[in-house]
Length: 382
Ligand SMILES: Cc1cc2nc3c(=O)[nH]c(=O)nc-3n(C[C@H](O)[C@H](O)[C@H](O)COP(=O)(O)OP(=O)(O)OC[C@H]3O[C@@H](n4cnc5c(N)ncnc54)[C@H](O)[C@@H]3O)c2cc1C
Image (cartoon, rainbow, N blue to C red; front, side):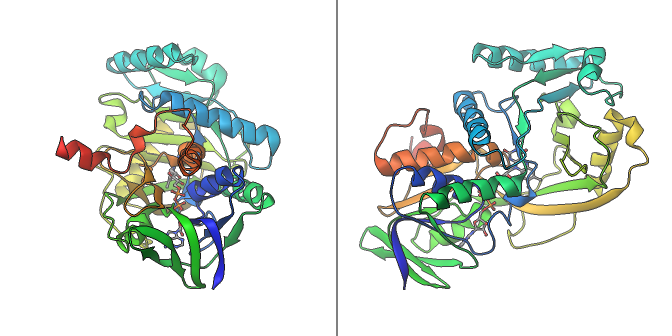
């Protein structure tokens, strides 16, 4: 029998690490179990942009809180390549202006400072972005982090407060006594716990099902490309305006890692799929490569001769409304923090705070109803 804890956190991706860190501040004993290695699943595949821009109107106060929290971690423990580089969202045509202006108004009303820039102003910020764009929005508060180092920082901060971590130990089953969860079975033996938080990314529903809990999480393919290392050439995170028809209504993200590799992806509408298995390791789609390279060269024509180095695919956890399931569900003592919809790196620290507040019975500083795991059942009943 592995030593028990007040709280068992299943999963050491960025969400499980953030939950463990937030709980470590409460003085409770916490044990994290990870089936592989920390950060080795979706989190390690992430572009890890931290920001509020063109994201989710209802979540704006929460996103601001998360951005501030990441900045505070950097101020205290500057070990995870936090770079407050800002974000540009390009517009290809005038028809995208309404949407860009809408987002700028919404974010300014929330106290943020996005702007609309013409191509010459864009090039003062991003000199190699010489492609024929109409304009771009600029959000100065966005940042990027190194995803592996960020997970490590959160876990080490938690471990310094006494949190235990057991890697390579899959949790195979939730243990129940009547209507209460009393721990988990793992490959390293059973662990007693008064509370269990499943932060298992796309594997979450499988473990929850062992307690009869049915979660609406499906795995969705996420893909990315990287070039060989380049001298510093992209300074910001570059994306497409969130607009009807913007980059054919899909999404794109381009940035340069500290290693010099240019990381980029473009997914056009219809290019994402909910099918697949979190354990699958397929190749990236050819159409994805073509669309991503086309967008990169549309914006940065001078990159035409740069060689591709690698590509990767991960299945991320998606819910019907693309928002996390975070909170209590099913038997007493069971909590979920998963289903990020592909934007969970930024939000992870807030998810940690929500779970810690709920376990402690404290009010949260932001809305938690948006993430209530029972929201779909409630809507159906209504
Ligand atoms: C290409 C790409 C780009 C992205 N870009 C961004 C971005 O710019 N900004 C942003 O905010 N987000 C981004 N995301 C999304 C973000 O990375 C994810 O939302 C986040 O990493 C999810 O973290 P997680 O901890 O929930 O999942 P994971 O990292 O998958 O962690 C879950 C962990 O639980 C473990 N686990 C599961 N089941 C068990 C079990 N039964 N027992 C033990 N361990 C278990 C797994 O092994 C895994 O380590 C991106 C994702 C991808 C793939």
